Length: 433
Image (cartoon, helix red, strand yellow):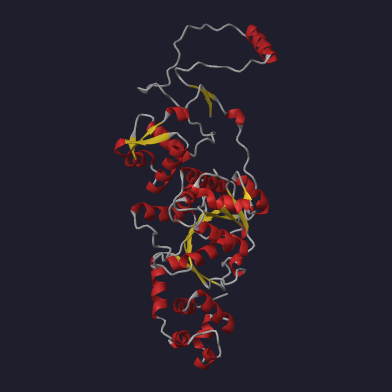
């Protein structure tokens, strides 16, 4: 359906979402509301005198400025009448009339969208779970939806990026305004827009005011089929998200945690009261939405995996199959004897630390980005800038992958802002890749 976006922006810029929705329902479209006789506004008893006066102001200057800003920043405007507008949002109590989208369009109604919520003061336990669950949800075909504020939200974003996306970030302000005005946060927005979408009800340039967050959370829950509460204190806003999800009839999940941890008191209370289902893995969540997941990827070909021996470690070999050994012996005795010489063992490790790791393409232990960073760190510690130059990764992906490698004990940050390999986190007596 063709819509005149200007009138949608006129209405939503004038009134709060609930009031704009009432006007929309009364007139059937913002355009009809714009051209209505002023007396018609008087018949709407729910409107205040101030709101009626605003509707009588027919200036569309602000709407045209919003349109120009969206055009210049490649921001898409979705209206309630557009075919791409998410059907799930049409079913909430007060749907948004306009959405601003930066990045790639996600077919929300066809995907298992899982909203992530958690405290900004995340503990290492919350950081790891936000990363791991988001990465695994994404790799399994689900779509992570979350805010891009610090703590659990931000780490869920990093995990989804590691999983390859797509992901969706719902923001309270404009889709072009970082919550934290830092270079890192701006880069993170760029990374999200490259593989997924940043979505808001508020026009570009809008600051992230506290009054907008409940509305943001309402839309976040509306887009999702389920909400995962990663970590939350006793009075965390995450509990409000869980309440909104329950009001919309959405599934609520929570990750169990240490009873003595203050940052887990809220999620543990949700579980105690039966308001959330306990989950131990992403599979526990996605098993409910198999009809929204793509066909499972083919399992890796384990016959191509090899055992890599670590120099300086004692080699342990599996017990041979007697039948196979006998067959090999007969084959060797029948074949002509080749002249052999005692050759020295081939040296594959020329590094000063006498450590070598072969990162095979068939391995799923590390992502391709993590492999590139690990290889770049084999010669010795390096700064983030040096790793970016060596791997070709952008700053956001390099930082996200280094975070996950650190969480998994493969690297650590040392003096001078450099990272180094933790060989104990990489090597065993023998390692399967």
